[in-house]
Image 1 (cartoon, rainbow, N blue to C red):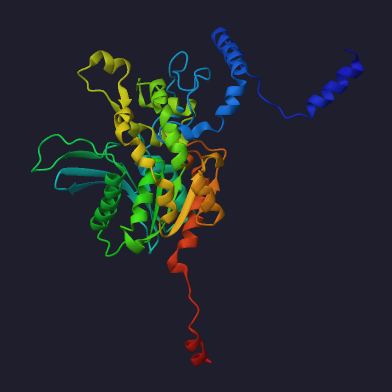
Image 2: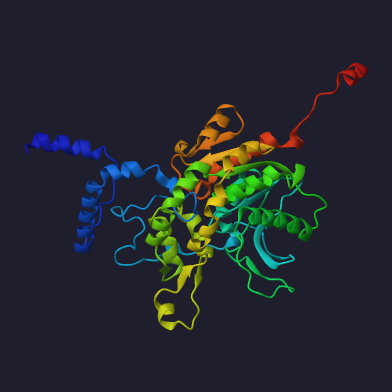
Length: 416
């Protein structure tokens, strides 16, 4: 290179921003990198096809992308989990002000509902959230933080559904036999109503605040049923459904067993469980994963010493055991959604999820549709701030207390 060429190159380089050099790859990392390049070339067309296939997880709230063997999305990381500080769990106290365990005595069972709440203030609304299958109430922790930034007077109530988190179900005093876990949409809907009413009693509210029901995946089906039946009356100002549509959800059920067979059955620590969720892009927001993932796992009992030392954390909810209810969760959902009274909001990660009924309803202006193409199945976690902004605007449009009706014609004439 001549001196003139060197001077020109130096001048160009001086105009570029400085970046730290990349560290050299170790031998293992270099081999792994080459393997990944080969995999990428082999499944280039497959990746394009899978980009929008996260509706496969609409039946389950623990998956985002239809499993692909060549992409190794759900495989354990080579060399094990790092479980670094960036994956350590976060406390719920940063997102909610109170935690309750509310007893619900029914004729055939006793339920201890576990919930988190930040009560509304000065007649603010209450956002009641219902998580999806396999998840927990803390799935909405980041959303709760962001919605209160958008609406400082608002409250948020988020609870663990039966068979999830720390909510427990046992036989009643008159029925001591073991109780089969009922996860039907009808039973979950009754639980949602009971949780709201028990909270009202616990906090001594004379009347319910204005309610906005928000449900993700399975939770979307539950809040839709409650709104459709009008069980809570005029207290419900509107409801929102996050990334679940009847047609795509039922289609996705065919790949559920394949997905469940590919995810790890156990983790050496909570941090490694959080790491897997973010590496597999099940949850794409690390901050949210650090608060939402720990309730999904439980530690094995200490008498299994060998297992306890190696892989002490397993899934709290056995999703495969809920197969009996999968189709019933979503059948008739689109019709129920469109026929429900009040404001309706549908948030999706892609327009491909819309079925025929919803497409027609959307063109007729029967509900508000918002699409977040950069989010995965867990919209409210991946895009917590954007979700909160959309939901806050939805509340403002449906807030009856903000309505100021014009005076009647007779009254206007009398004043003049």
